[in-house]
Length: 156
Image 1: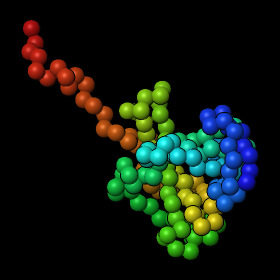
Image 2 (image 1 turned 45 degrees about the horizontal axis):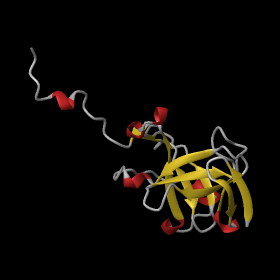
Image 3 (image 1 turned 135 degrees about the vertical axis):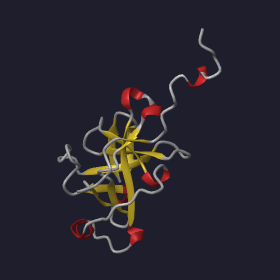
Image 4 (image 1 turned 180 degrees about the vertical axis):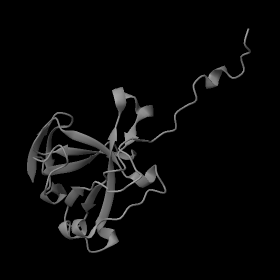
């Protein structure tokens, strides 16, 4: 059991087998190697990837298939070996989310660089997809049409 101080969650205790290990860190956070996944709440599709080394570093994530039913990509052989993936059941996939100016309705998912975790070993990697049509900013929710509430008003 490891005691960790966080800004968002206060002081928490993390079981060793729940620690997610990123051997190379995360792109732009290469010095961050240990994290824990904390559910937003029991009913939410969102989780936080909380750093164990940096109290104020937590990424919001979700399982992309909940929002993007057709999302698919291949895990390259090197990543399979690095994460010791032996079967599809080992794999859990998350995508990092961005909430621009705190507006939930404008939330986007980074489908170009999914987070791959071996649930059996807790080894993880953010895999940057090469030659992909995905981007770092796929909207989770459709944008509402501007002026949709004004449709019944006539011009004067």
